[in-house]
Image (cartoon, rainbow, N blue to C red; front, side, top):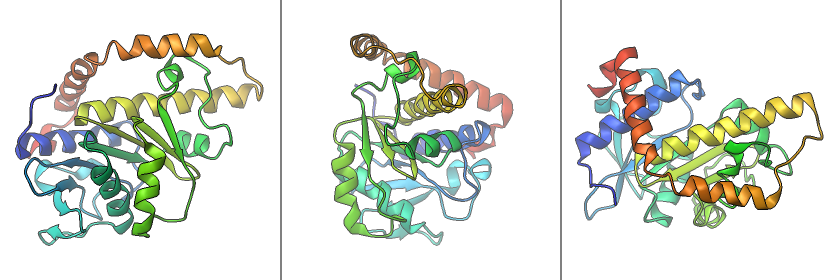
Length: 241
């Protein structure tokens, strides 16, 4: 069970996720979004204001949005970002953090009929833990929200076909960890298929075995998150402002 974080701590963690994503080159200019649910009776979440680059975002820049799309403050919120993030926050009580990316590798795998292949140890972590959502155009239709939630199910990750990747977690650390390794699995697949269109796959039973091994080490995500925060302190600590 993770301790409940106050708004200030959530702002720092989410801003850190944006800065780290820029460092890992996951950003898509001013597009794609990360969000985290705020504590309290009224359902609200923090998200990036539309128009800022990931490398610029500070804790104080994040805006508060309710589940009806009302922004508390003067900064704008991207409509497609609201559709996707509000859908998951409304549909999954445990999805406190939602991360969505348009990385090259993620979008490449999202364009394949077979999706993510069992090619390596990293992809094995997603064996049975990955949903798929068919493309419906730019996410401007609020009616798509229930279909996004249905496609995600109880999985920690979702491939949005022809679009990108999405991960969820009880904390920013959990969702970021999942995105890091989902994207890495996609990068490996992109590299492997560029070498051989008929690669050797991990046998089903071994993928299932490796996934169970990964499930026993979820506590390590918080250790890794602290290591990433130390890296960010060395790179640029202004994210906390």
